[in-house]
Image (cartoon, rainbow, N blue to C red):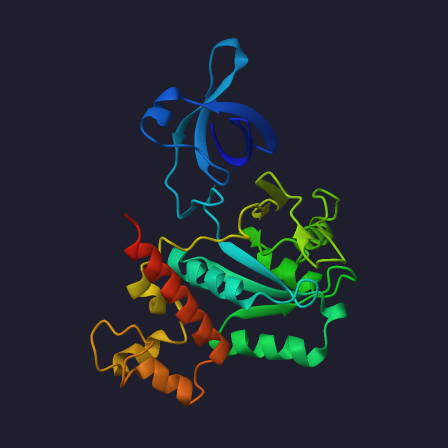
Length: 291
């Protein structure tokens, strides 16, 4: 039988096949070969002795995210809170760079519209729409933007990401139509979220549509990207790299840099460039101290 892993709890894999859920374990030789099934994997499995199910093969993946572990995602949905907590655009730019690196289409949701001023929302929206990203404004509390989000997710396997407290769980409850995930709490005292999502799971919305709520994206490690290649994943910047005079230009201090010139000409958003510099320096520092 062939099915999709929708959840993994204590090395028990829950596989959807023919509109039913089966429990299975991984065959021992998979562990010997450093192959571990994960949520999102399409697998072959069969019944063995004592009516137990065992996974015999992991079918080829289109992509694989290491942290948190999930496979075959076709949409990455990045939820940004406009208030409580304030927008974390550095995290968003890391997420977007990583989605470009993985080749997964991103969607940006600017949430908590009801708490923010219109000019604050529109300023952020314009930055990312000008780059070419799909940006949806929403309010999880009153349901605004939910239908647009549903349309973008139809026929896709989507993972939601964002800092704790940005409203991921509330949005998912609105989209899925049931209280399947606990809502994150925000402390009025310190304005920091408490992460209540602990298990990666795929929720089936319809035959070809799944949504994942995955813990771990709040840290979002992009160390798989080399610092020298980072600019390739800032898609509005890479077109100007051909104008750099020096091969291997870091686009930070060099003279006659095409990207810095584009910044001066306001063809690149200042916040995006500043976040590129922070990310580049962080990656470079980790590379130099790797050993």
